[in-house]
Length: 38
Image (cartoon, rainbow, N blue to C red; front, side, top):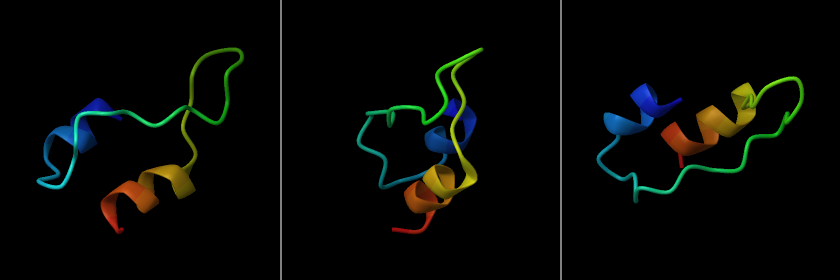
């Protein structure tokens, strides 16, 4: 997730809350695409 965010010029430095918390922190595809395509 961090690698994707580093290349976005519109990124403000805040990571969104992951949707899946257990067994480890995971983001959904919908969350990732909503960051890339506002």
